[in-house]
Amino acid sequence: MKIEKKRIAILGSTGSIGLSTLSVLESLGPGYEIQALSGHENWQELARQGLKYHPRKIALTETDNLAEFKEALGTENNIEILTGPDSLKDLALDADCDVIIVAVVGVAALAAVLAGIEAGKTMALANKEALVCAGDLVMSLAREKGVQVLPIDSEHSAILQAMSCGDRKEVKKVILTASGGPFRKASSDEIDQVSLKDALNHPTWDMGPKITIDSATMMNKALEIVEARWLFELDPEQIEVLIHPESIIHSLVEFCDGSVIAQLSRPDMRLPIQYALTYPNRLPCPAAQLNLHELGQLNFEAPDTKRFPAVRLGFEVARKGGTSGAVLNAANEAAVEAFQAEKIGFTQIAELTESCLKNHEFVKNPDLQQLIQADQWARAEIDRLVNTPQHAST
Image (cartoon, rainbow, N blue to C red):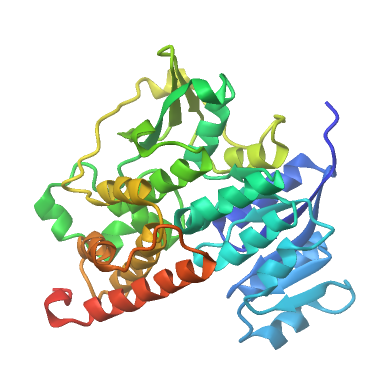
């Protein structure tokens, strides 16, 4: 099969998704050219990548160690160095890049996502926040520009793959699976006592600390509900969540005739990363192969929204839209930071996030500036709540 050459920019190449993307690109070979890389604080890894992959451009968004970074990178490679937060947008606009891999965590990537779409680039998103905060804005612009927005996370990649088995109008509903995190069987009292160390111990996936904590609270599933609503133009009533602790079925699509199509694979992010890179084609992948005989059985259960209220918040935000997604994302990010700093307890992450959702000044059809303002308000509100005596962690 002849595959058209693709020129790749990886925003966030030093994180876990970025590193997995580089692994996949090495496996795919010369048909995929690395044109640009970016990193934030891990300048040593970014310099190593520059020396190994020789991109045309490198962006370092945190400049405290810029001098050391330049020295480590050297001058003989003729790599153009960009700095500061706007450098992500500059890479997304680069005329020599066809596909932009957005592996930057947080709302910081939103401007780059919109810029890349405006420039007609294929956007492959591992970043949930762009769609959670500004899904309507992002997808409306993508439709206007005729741009593909491809998911990299395992659940939405699974939906994309399963949807190819029928016409989009034939889809009845999608079912997002969730591992249930480390506290799937824990009682409410036990969850109340969860420590930071406990929350960072995921039973299935090896992820960064913020995403791991989101999985423990199931806020990651709340974000994915909102993401699916915009990415696939679904009504919130067409989305369900199913606990599946083995993390083998990554999501399912039910069609109008009752057929349910599932995508199964080992929990390895290299597969959804590669599918986004090669879409709509498939090539051999370095991800671990699935052996159903060795697994023996797969288990399923309904989510408990009393013990994990974040799931309920996801559905509320998917129904409401507007600025609520920006508030959900920002409030959760700030609350997770407070939990990591041991200023609040584990269950307070969802509690404080819900308080922000209830009390923010809702805007139904926000522009980008209003979304940014909602994000900033939510972070300030979490800070205020965290520093209110009755919310102090015990």
